[in-house]
Image (tube, rainbow, N blue to C red; front, side):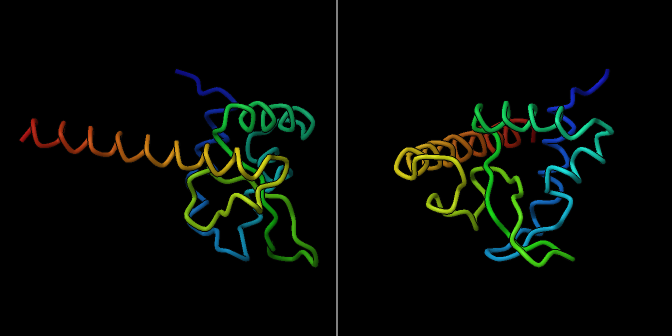
Length: 122
């Protein structure tokens, strides 16, 4: 089974976003680094990131990354605990707040379902 570019990028983001704080993020979450990791040209990854952003699977925020003087755009999941809706780049803060709350409720529902399934297996 071959993973799609979107699946690979989401896997990288999920694996590295634990290192994201309110101020810093690993450079691996920048568009340039994601393009290198996937082995695709940066313009192609740009299109993929737009698709993932439009689907609500990732959001863009500004964070300090190592070896950079200015904050850079990085990608994280919309439910990341350090993300505040007003700092998401390219979105309506009120709508984003509602979307984040909806996603958090959905994640909670899924976690409850997983726990029920685990209990049924035992």
